[in-house]
Image (cartoon, rainbow, N blue to C red; front, top):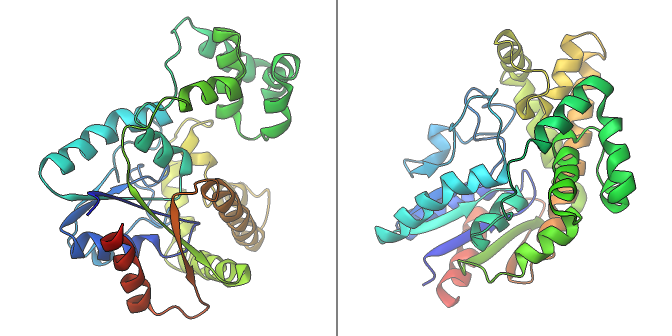
Length: 309
């Protein structure tokens, strides 16, 4: 049996429950690949698994850093790869799970992004964005990497700065840089299992229900506690779906209901992007989930894939 199982799919598709069940069945531990569950104090809005949901299964890469800390794919790999190696060294099954495709792929590949020299370009770009706005950095991208300038949303300041930094440091677009990095053979060869719904609307309905439950469980109060900590305004954590919208409501920019509706809309869009990302991976064994899923059947199907793979 493959000692590494990757469980992937869109948000609210049931990855946590399946990962825990597989880890319990095959004597494993779960390694999270979620870019927001790494933050301490961000529990409700990230759908962080509860003690009841983890059922005593060891989970790694959850509650690792403070919300104000800077984080990246490279830093994730620096922290997660030694954990993965330790799980394997102890003869355990590693169940890698999460919806952040970039993190999953980088961990499996084992090399992430090629390192760039530290010449201060990133800091210069960050200062430019602070002084003149992110449009000033986008203007640099339009001149040297129009594809990235058109692809990246102005709100995605971190990736915009990263793309500009890559070109200024290497003379190559970030697309070319990433393709060259990905040409290196992967470090690990996991078994991939993907979850998705037969009907996209069923997935969207689950997302909407999850958001309603988050609000009921105290999402806005959680955001208020984060704001009280006086975190840096531009930190990644506060830009996350489920956090930036309540912040807008708490500032009086939109109503509470508008914030809730916006979280649902952005979460559905995110789920669509996740599916687009994972569908490029032809090694994924997809399990199609019906409107009213029978978890026993889903687990049985997943176990067949694991045992035959």
